[in-house]
Amino acid sequence: MIEDMLERIKNGDRIALSKMMTLMEEDEGIRKKIIKKIFACPVKGKIICFTGPPGVGKSTLIDQVLSILTEEGKRVGVILVDPRSPYTGGSLLGDRIRMQRHATNPNVFIRSVSCAENPEGVSRTVKDLLKIMALSGMDYIIVETVGTGQMAVEVSYICHTTVLVLMPNMGDDIQMMKAGIIESADIFVINKCDLDGAELTEAYLRDNIEKRDGWMPPIIKTVGYNRATVKELVDKIKEHIRKESCRYREKIRGLLMTMFLDYLDELGLEFIKNCGKFEELVDDVASCRKDYYTATEELFEMLKKEVLKNDKGN
Amino acid sequence: MKKRILIAKVGLDGHDRGAKVVARALKNAGFEVIYTGIRQSPEQVVETAIQEDVMLIGLSCLSGAHIPLFRRVMELLREKNVDIPVFCGGTIPPDDIPLLKKMGIREVFGPGSSLKDIVEKAKEMVAE
Image (cartoon, rainbow over all chains, first blue to last red; front, side):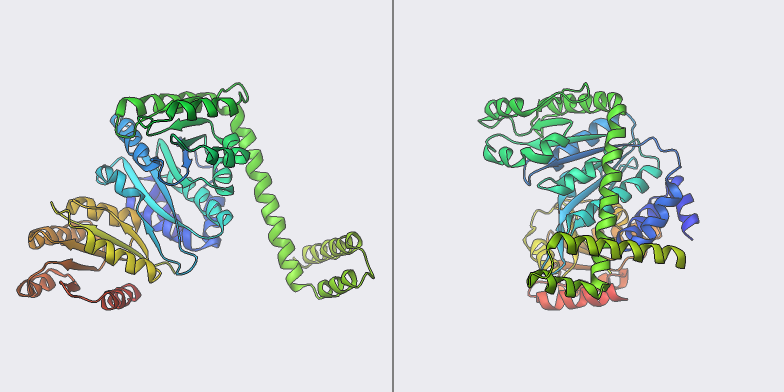
């Protein structure tokens, strides 16, 4: 059944794509299976990430970008991530309101995804959803995330171009984001630049941006409803995609590292949960019978043995 | 399993308070609510339902044009061969309810409906 669905997705079947995305969202096992099946399929789709704080106008910008790209005859997929309530599990996915005029365009496919309390989990899902969208023959795939933490950095590993959207008078917020997000962005946008304070924000940004691998991240001032200002952004995105190939490998390096460390993390937690000796070691350290370095090393030795044993078992 | 639902306002009608209140109640009941905003065409609603792979569609209309607009939505769903249950709400005269049900609309929530009822019915329809 999955083979059949993948074939239909490659042929541009929208219902198959939509159903497959639901399956992948709900089941990690299926997701892994699909990615292992499709990784070698040639895809032309370039992935662009729009990130930034809530309310700066990311969705409105994407709406304009969609107009510009589809008028060039391009096919574009969009994944919109909105938060999910940790209390009820419910969510209100409202990003697509800003781009509903593209809902019936056969060259556009828009999908909303809710983001749980655990940001790593979401970025894991979203990066796989991007892959399946790429398989359906999109020229570009745009992902929108609320960029206030680790998640945007992780998604940015598989994006060709990351656009950080800010707005005037954000002052100390920028300071807050300096570690992490500023380094991961390839293009900076100051949206709503018709508001007071745009120049100051620009000056502040310029002080903090550095040239990286031969690319100086540009700062573009836009007004969401003014198409001409967004056209410059689209041109810069294309220019960056053309130049980014050397850095793309670096990003994959980061991705692989993160995924491997994630894997070890899970392995370690699982081990501690099932390890009878762990509580004993806690007692030893608490009552000064052992130091915590020795205890950690002993745990690691046990984990090693466990892994070797499992290997033989398999 | 996730409960994805589309809340959409069709036609030239900007009265969105009802749709927003219902959307919020569903969100608080654990639904993933995709809200299209106002002034949607039946084509936009059906395409959105397909792309978002929702399990249920809630239509809202307060302009009086609910019969032709909802009928078009139902026709498009059949044309595209997607089987998603539909319910509706708004200023709908009780006399219109039999016709709406005949079109295939599962539930009609007129003025004065309770949110508790709407949420309960939505849960039932999703569970099928």
